[in-house]
Image (cartoon, rainbow, N blue to C red):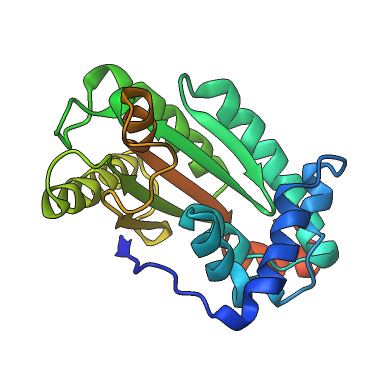
Amino acid sequence: MKTVQRLISRSTLLLAAAAITAGLLGGCQANNTMKGGAIGAGAGGAIGGVIGHQSGNTAIGAIIGATVGGAAGALIGRQMDKQAEEIKRDLEGAQVERVGEGIKITFNSGLLFALNSSQLNNTTQQNLRELAATLNKYEDTEILIEGHTDNSGTDDHNQKLSEERARAVASYLAGQAVKNGRLQTVGYGESQPVADNATDNGRDQNRRVEVAIYANKKMKKLAEKNQLGNS
């Protein structure tokens, strides 16, 4: 299991990031497989960090950073379509989104943990068992797990709690036979809110665990050779 650092962007890439974000995240007319092939091959790694930083969501940045684009990206997108549908069917209470050539899952922390705790609730472990079963079916993916908190408490407490919660999810998935080498964890504390911390509803949304699923090197190579799904 690996711990990753926050993606850092360069200001010179902001224009390219904005254009690709609009194409991949805002194109209502394009289907998900088309979105997977929309970006030019090799561009994703250069701008993924920019997109994640500017959107305030590094899970999205990680997915876009793994983009290969072109025909290979379209094949990966098709594979991710299938995987996302299975995850949506099996996970209760989690938000599952297709982004580019990957999948983003958002769990409200209240579904997984008691307040100020990193111990997984027994009643919600079934969700993670279902997720692990799908992850094990589609082995050629990387998995980034991010912990986030609201702004209640000190910065240090929130940072530690977010890291512990991300590791708790990763450890449980590893216990369900998901390979450690696929799992990366990072905690962001209160630094990446998605809603207003001044309200109860906003704080509830900010207490979350996000999971990014994207192609590994093997899947990319198979897609580039037009062999994805034949291995």
